Image (tube, rainbow, N blue to C red; front, side, top):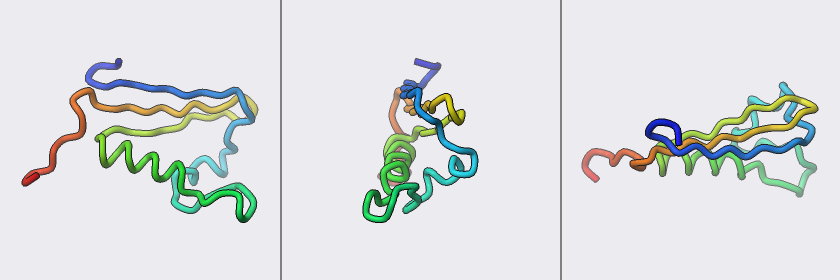
Length: 85
């Protein structure tokens, strides 16, 4: 827990995400995989669900050669309810 948020971190010790790619990984249809091996929808959909449905955030920190850490932050009280809902 961090204040009024729950924080979940997922890390690996892989090759990391190169700087020129990192800014695009949450873009729809962006993939570094060969044609037919990925749609580029996983991270954009995950971020959209975390943000829009739960009012949270999904971010990444990565160091080439040292791995990556994805951080999910979710408000304890849930997403704000839109006016008129």
